[in-house]
Image (tube, rainbow, N blue to C red):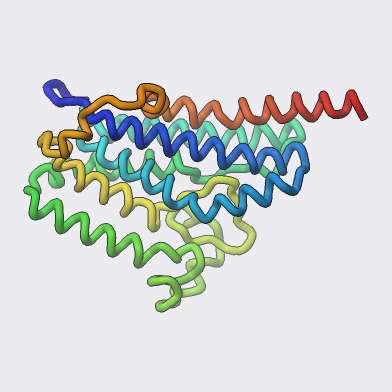
Length: 258
């Protein structure tokens, strides 16, 4: 955070809550993927209904924090590089040692990193906006998020407007949301629509930057969630290797008693 700004502990707590939800969600996928228990896939699929909620919390808080960062673009490069590292491990290294089906192409870190870079480039313009301009930006972003939410399914406005099929003939534009039926990613967040959610948070960050959030946002409540929220990048990078290790240990122990 920039010097002289009060820490908004609620942002740390919300981000920590979102990351815990994500780890909990992925754990059930791993139970199905590694331990081959159908109950894992069933619970994972059930929780997918709630997934947009905790990812919305995470992405919006990240957008807000982009207004509080000393250098948003530089942080974006770091996060995007972390996303590339995740792709390298899951799509190259893991298949090479016989673990396939968990490949990640343009996951949440890649999406967040590129969103930070783009927002950071235009941050001087965003910072010029007053509260009315920021409120208008939030409204436009909310509209564009809803309009583009179904891009990966080939349409705008949840099926009301069909998009040209040539956009979906290859997977080269998967980072934008355009891909064909052969595309698979265990974690996938295309720029459309998620960039607009991040930018919504960046516009909302005007009030955070001015110290104009409600007083309760600056109070420290749950230190555990704050710690998780402050270390969300490392937790995201390490949670799957840790979960896989636990699941494979359980699988090995089960073999000993079969």
